[in-house]
Image 1 (cartoon, helix red, strand yellow):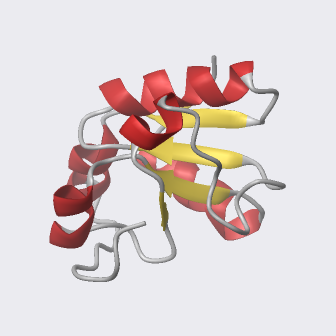
Image 2 (cartoon, helix red, strand yellow):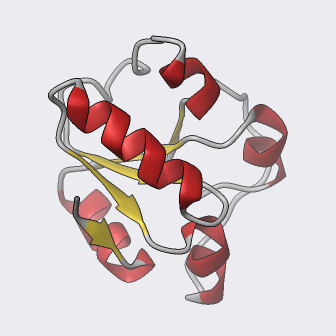
Length: 107
């Protein structure tokens, strides 16, 4: 399965992909990438659908450190979707100096 650096993920989401954040609600509201869509791994693993606007686009999956995003990308790929994950998750995203926003409604 393909894995992207945070910079590669930002480029891909600027182009055509959706950044899918699979962390839990508290983590999401504490800070997420602008434009990201929230879909916790716990819901996806239980069979939840993707949020509107994410189902028909390539997915770049992110979590805190990369473990859950790798699991989610594998799960989504098994569903026939185009999904890759971000190496190092939001920890690496922040370390790369990429934008983070706090607040917002958890999905």
